[in-house]
Length: 316
Image (cartoon, rainbow, N blue to C red):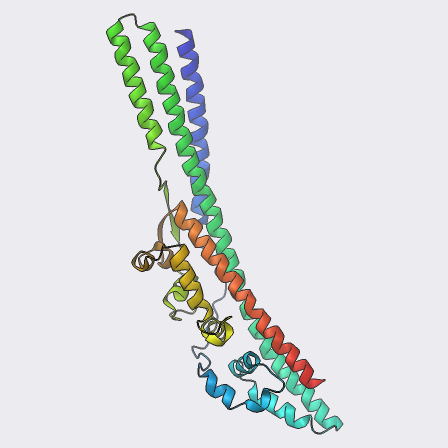
């Protein structure tokens, strides 16, 4: 009897510790519920997207192909710097000091536009990074919540089994002893099966500024992205094979790896909504998708770097 008393006290202490841990987890979830990644100042970008008629742009600027790649020409057009480059090429034929000064002035003007474009890319990549970290944090908390729940159920299962064994040993009547053993075993088995819940706990997670929604819909329906960044995402000439845009290829991979090629499931996913109740798997998928977009955004810097190299060769 004394053993049973000590065992029950020990069980209560463990249960209390798990309960306190759950309270801490839930409090942390509340602090991560709404986004802290949004920019403190909302800049109203122009809604004008650069022209997608890339073949016509390249055909109209064949004189630049000796010094610039096709991608560099398209970036110059997107930044509205083609006139400056044409002017530099004319001035390069004149070796006078006045021409050299004018060339440097034009190059400064182009560099200013490039600098703005680079900071826009960095800002978007930083927000993807921040959102990815926020989702990863809350995903870890939900994982801990599921682990705590399973630990609680396992503890109760152990308590039920141990209590049934002790009670069965105390009770002398065989009928009652057998009934206690059977009841304890059934309760322990039921609690054990409850730990096999494949979906786990849900948590509310809000993201009204949803960077992934525009990417999934392949439409700039919000002020989430600067027009230049969106152009780089959606112009096929900036993808590896030039058959699909960056976000079109990204969407295909998401559909296959995150949604098992089930487009209806993807369209209805909480990931592309204003937010809602997430399970751990959805949170991990969202974190992976945000990180993939961050990487894709940073790779655009390579194209701009090539433009800068082409421009330097022209000036020298």
